[in-house]
Structures are given as C-alpha cells and as structure tokens.
Figure (tube, helix red, strand yellow):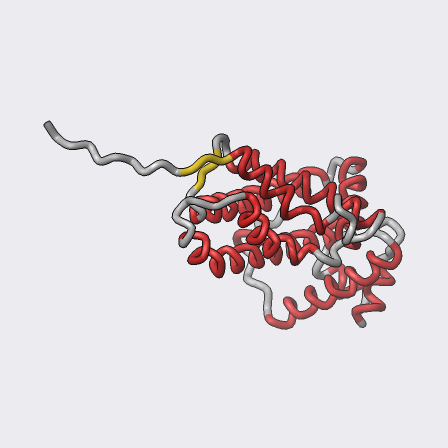
Length: 226
C-alpha cells in the first residue's frame, strides 16, 4: 500500500484536473443523485477520459469523499473569516450581550447556508451509502470528526470574544448546533428557506441555545500576597 506521506505533492495540472472533476461531479450528483450518477457522466461533464478520472480517484465514492472534504474546508474557511471580521465588534460588548444581539451576529454565520438544500440532499445520500458500505464508513466518520473539531474551536473563539464560555465541552455544543443546522436544512429542502423552522429561523434558535449552554466569563481576581 502506498504511503501518502511520501508521495510528491500534486502538480498544478493535476490539481486543475481534480478540481474540474469535482466541479463536474457537483452538477452531475445534483441532477442524478450520488447513486444514480456514473463515472462516465462525470468524465463527460468535465471533458476528461475515464483514465484521467481513475488517475485521481479510485472510485466514485472516493471522489465524493474528496468533494465533501473540499466543501467542509470551504465552510470552515468562511466561518473563520466571519469570526475574524466580527471579533472586534463582539469584544466591544465587554461580555454583556443578549440573545437578540447574538442572533444578529449568528445571522452572518448561517447566511452562507442559503441555497444549500442540494448539498443537504447529497450529504444524506452519501451518509446512507456509507452506512451500507463498511469500506467507506471509516473515512466518512473521520472527515465528520475533523470538521466538527475545527468548527468547535472556531465557535469557542467567537464565544470567548463575546465574553462567554461553554459550561461543557465545545465539541459537544457544536454537535448540537450541527444537529439544529441539519434539521433546518431538512425543513428548507422539504418546504422553503423562508420557513420559520428552516434556515431562516436558525439565528434565533442558535442564539437561545448558546445562552443556555454558556456563561459569562468572570474576571479572575488577582491574588494578593500576604
């Protein structure tokens, strides 16, 4: 088995090929579904041969894992950029912020979820596929764990900037928030994004949750030596 750690980094041409295959796969998966899509359809959409496909991915499932990884990384980068932009404003509250104000800030974090109903559908299709295929499941779970850990770290940073801290581990709180986002995406996919229980209602719901699972950071009194 080849050890990826000793492989040369991909060339610019290889990265471009992979990128075009991934972009084509998004369109084909959205049209035909994960199981309904074929390697041939993806290759035709990208303008490559099957040989080009299999020199980059061992299977359609591996391609979708790479697609999910790219999407999760993009989401993390988006959240990281928003936190960096909002941190100065959060700090101006000096730890005094209410649920309504929190909802206004959270709106920025969930805004990029608009129009993501097709991604929710694809992710659920792949989840079912991974549940049925023990060869896919480990890589899928590892990807989910990495994404959750990265997001938890960012959420904890934003909470601290607002002068609050979690009353239990941030990764557990993040998993709850992820569950809320998935439910909202499901409603939006079934109804519309304007539905009160869909993406549109997330900011207020997450704001309420964060106030329930966080507390103000109390200033630590310096110890005066006797």
